[in-house]
Image (cartoon, rainbow, N blue to C red):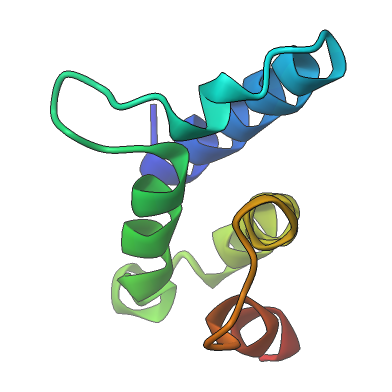
Length: 84
C-alpha cells in the first residue's frame, strides 16, 4: 500500500469515526509515534515528479482538506499545497 493510499484510507476512517461520535481518532498515535496529520505532513514533502508519479498528487487533496479542517492551518501549508 502506498503512503498516499494509506493516508487517504486513514482519513476516510477518521471521518467515519467522527461522524459516529468519536473525535479522538484524529489524535490517535500509532505504534511508530505518528498521527494522521504527521503522516500527511510527511507525504506532502515527497516530490511525486522524482518518481514520475505526479498523477498521485491529486489523491492527497481530500486528505489535505480534511486535515486542514480538523487541525487548522495557521501556517497556510495546506492551502498552499492545494493551490499548487
